[in-house]
Image (cartoon, rainbow over all chains, first blue to last red; front, side):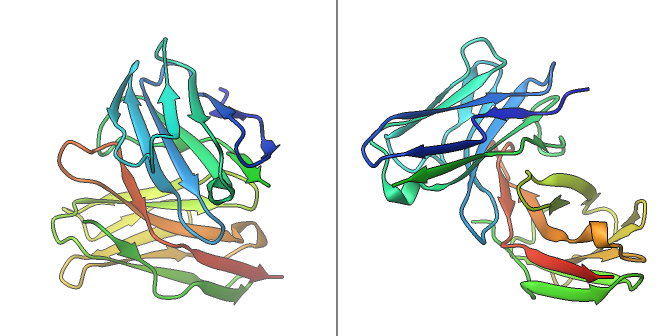
Length: 115
Length: 114
């Protein structure tokens, strides 16, 4: 079946602009995760949803970052007043159920470049 | 907090050789470990996992070894192929209620020469 999909695949924006990144999880997966990956680094956790609610948003760097999952499926990561330091690959993952030993399946990521 | 680290950032091998990628972790309470493979331009792909009640687990051409005494795990790839060229990460789930959060190591770049 289809895997996790993310759109757009690439996004170039100017400093100070607002961006939205979209994630479509695997159908039927109840848990959804956002990570950010800087060049040469491993992914860093941002936020995790169980259904519609954010179960853990401890990784969001500041209040410019916000994510929603209104119907428990598609999620949108929103970044306000973008800064050059926000440039990174934003990865989305989903798992069938929430849990420590549930395999997280990753999408291809959105490459964000803030000029 | 949890941290994972990798001993070598790069590994270069010849096709057909066996590869060993290492990872150290800091939290002795960690009880579950995962290896991911990330090819250029793609998201991480699950390879294999291991729970702390095991010291070895085998998959197709891959074996993960866990040494809880020294808090070290390794990923062994048998008969490495050019398609194995990628960045390999070990990852550990957070404890407590933050069980959705994976902590990744920096990664090892594996290059396989034909």
